[in-house]
Length: 112
Length: 115
Image 1 (spheres, rainbow over the protein chains, first blue to last red):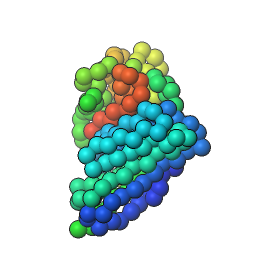
Image 2 (cartoon, rainbow over the protein chains, first blue to last red):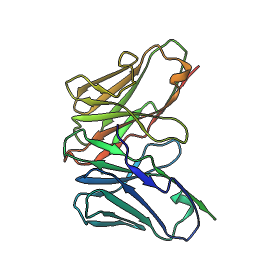
Image 3 (cartoon, chains in turn orange, red):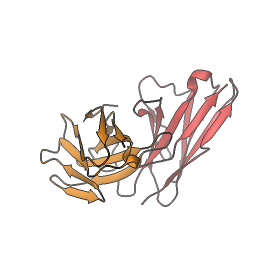
Image 4 (cartoon, rainbow over the protein chains, first blue to last red):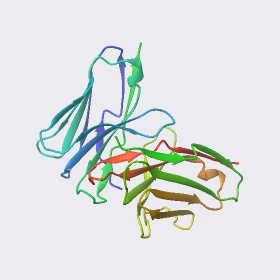
């Protein structure tokens, strides 16, 4: 299906640095979801956002649902080696609907 | 949180045979499940959307006779790769729409190797 835009596509950072990545669309979504995928495994849900403007944290991770409902960002503070992986965003338009689209992912590498 | 389990985690089969992958929602009922395929270093590619009790909706370019999807109960969807060929070797992942209808939970994925 239709994809969201994620940027950057990939990033290399030093351990301890903060990371910021975002997800944008030309369409409005009612839910934004952020996932992390480790190599050879299925994506794991990190943060779910259900309201425009909502800011939610999960440990060192913080995500926000954009006011326009067309974007979302994910921040990781004080990165550690296990943060390595692919981060996917996903947008849902309607509850119980099938209008679910996902981004191509941001590949994060953390250098010791 | 909600748990989705896939089985098997990995499978090797001979070319020409069929293989079935199961996707179960362990602690919630999933009326809608999704099947994806993922090639190395690439994003998830949606193959089909599976609704309990009805026929799956396949994405353009996905052969419905090749990839049979059955969603016979609220907690189980299966993907059967029929007459598998080496080019079908891939990582297959399922996901399920949660009870509230606004969150997707993924399975652990299944590696298929066709020799």
